[in-house]
Length: 422
Image (cartoon, rainbow, N blue to C red; front, side, top):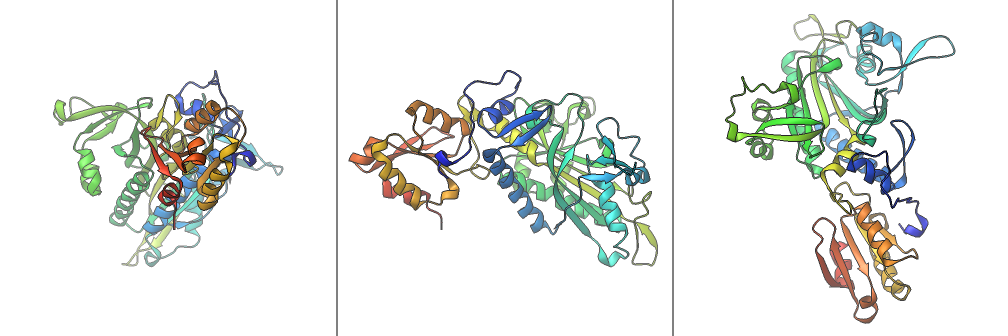
């Protein structure tokens, strides 16, 4: 993509209302633009990151056996009255009324819709286990939306819903999703920590939050330092049993982990999984015939990942004083190609044409060298190929690793071969 043909409205100064790094850099790097409190337009660069995160999530969810669907944003209130949550959910729910005077709502979550979908079509244990997921926009009317996409009112979420005939099956589904979440976050270059958590308004009695470590995190995590050893093995039962909790769940009186073995860190929540049995299937009459011929309520679980929240969380975990440092797996472009002067345009064009254009953001604009360098550091692409006067005289370019700052000189053909993908 040629920058001269792209829409990338970067900002030089830090916006006064943006308090944390991810919000500042999201605005300055041209990822988002606020149109109302907690509501944002996703600009082209930010949308590329969002779509890349979606693709990773979708791929691992499909590998797990979950099946993608798409449930509506606007839901009828009667489904929530059936489950008993309509009056209990609170002011975060955006309640609306259509022209027929029917009570509706903009979905903050989709347990009721998923339960309603399955109760009309699944009748036998032979149809289970089943896990459906979708990636859809939600709305929660936060009292104080803040931190940009980290705590907005409108947000993109991947949520999945599992259905099983009994607890044993539901636990298998839960464990499978726990393992799938580890794979998803590790593919993004993150190190997730699964902590036991309160179930909140979702309900149920088994719940884990997934966090990443960040100094600006809202949560305080307490975890056994053996957690990371087990994370590599992806041994779900061992990970679930190791001591790892957040905030008020930590009780020094009952914590058996030796003090020197207990880590205390700030973290950002990026995912949450729940098992809640028949909390929804019972009141909504979602039952199946079991293998012994009995009519039983389905056992359910739900599994959420904050897709848009992840953009902010990744920036919080990967940045410096110059800008964002995207992990290669989620970067909007892999390479920033910088043409420093008109005389080397032929060499820069040659590199651009040799590489995949959807992996390269080519700065072919007119402007000062300082602005070009600052802008490319700000948007944080993993690699920079810098084409200066040596390209014309000696056929040499500089290749910079954004994360380490290391710069190497390479022959043009060597640089092309280094970044060519089959």
